[in-house]
Image (tube, rainbow, N blue to C red; front, top):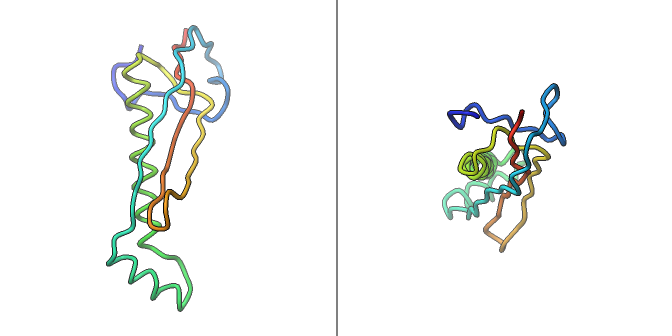
Length: 111
């Protein structure tokens, strides 16, 4: 059994190579909803005129992904999992100025 969240194995595959699943604990997930800030929205609109990466939105979504991922790990750790397999990530628009990021997978104990 793992002692810290940093030891959690997270994979998009259905298992962990070289390890055998002893027990399936269940679905784990983490999500967050982030909204655009009016200041960065103005800057992003100006950047859209000249093209290129909209760094304000990229940073916003990067932070949302990290938070949702961490919440999934917290959920798995709370269940006593050694690993999370079959991990997926989805994003969706809640409204014009807000997006949801969700990570989910199956928490397992390894032999």
